Amino acid sequence: MDRDELIFSEYRLYSEQKENFIERNFKTNRFYMASVFVLIVALIYTGNVIFLNKISATLVFALLGVSVSALWWMNVDSYNMLIKVKYANVLEKIEEKLPVKPFTDEYKGIDDFRSNKIFMFSDIQKLIAVVTALFFFAVCVSEITPLVMNLFNKVLVIVSRLKGGI
Image (cartoon, rainbow, N blue to C red):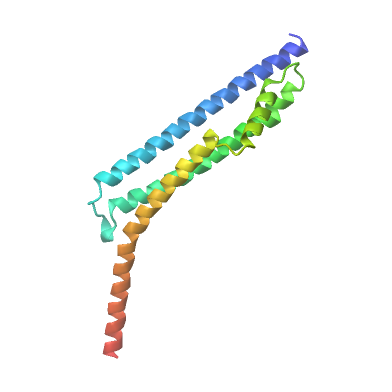
């Protein structure tokens, strides 16, 4: 195998691995979407279940939802960074040794497209993760508020008893 064939074989192998990596990214996003869906269904069907100290299942699932949404956003962000590294730092450098540079041209095209402020798929994924995090956070606030108010009222009762007893 001569040098050019070896470079092309490495390029093809790395390109296939990059595509597998992108496919794994899509599978991961499907997992997060399914998790969010399951948590929303759990919120709906366990709204009346109360755990210890008046902590509701709704609060537990909402906290899980915020956590899953945050992890989803971080995952999308890290996959995007790794995909960019695979393009810019590896494939483009290998393409410098090839007569044609399809990934370099593709990446420049994506960069030009992105500079027009048009949403990319990863931006939509991040937006969905943020919206779900805000939804779950709002549910958390609505569940925590009565608990905090109840605790505050108990503290006021104790303070008033102490003042009355002194």
